[in-house]
Image (cartoon, rainbow, N blue to C red; front, side):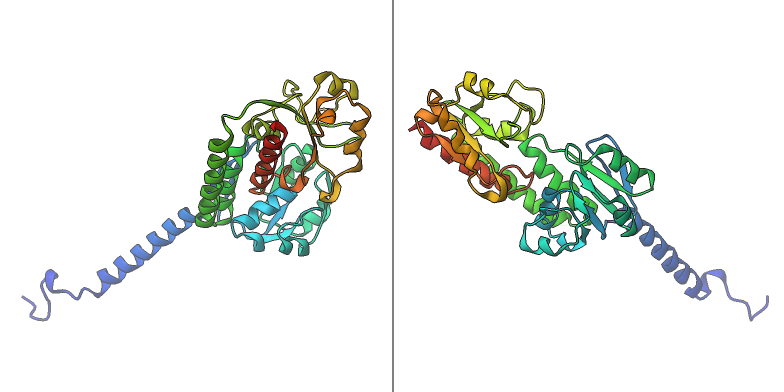
Length: 306
């Protein structure tokens, strides 16, 4: 036997240990890569896959901007649309138009890794063009109050802010449950919710505000409409005889046109002085602040019940 040769089991272990460490490191890299990937399906049925959480986001609706800030991802927004004014930090974000008409060229030039769209607010054609250009687009459409909590969680996945998103969603659900518990047995009262005056616009049964009204024990007099925000005639409102009229208005101020209903003294809402105003930012945005508006509407209906 060659005395310079060693038994196999006595060979130095440097080579296999090094190999093991390299293999383990490569495996961890693969796991980390797989763990950072994001896969979600949006309101249009489109499946979105991101290799990693988004850090450069364009938000195409004020409520989407609010939701990102609510989960601690406000610093990921590189552009948004007009009226994205909450919280205060959102006012400093560059604008690329409004939610019904935005500048596609400017948007593409920003090279976002995610665009957040609003199905019933943004033009479908523009969103399709963005997808055709290869941009990652996620479109949402909250139709129920619980959808807002789920959207918070989805945005948490898309941005890598899962923990803060889960906390925000849990807090939202707890507040919603408390409102349900407090007002679920209140006597019904008929409500006309007026979004605008010329043309006269309200909310239909599929709108999230219909659920808000029902949560407070109200009955939306146009709940049978299949449109989200139907135009209605003054005669239809007079025929519905609402006991309460609640109006939104520009800039959060009580609109002058709310008092135009006083011309029809036969309306129960006018006769009993049940004409109210709620800041639309607190009720018409699909964000956690909708529960602030809901609580206010519930108090209004309690006052109207007497």
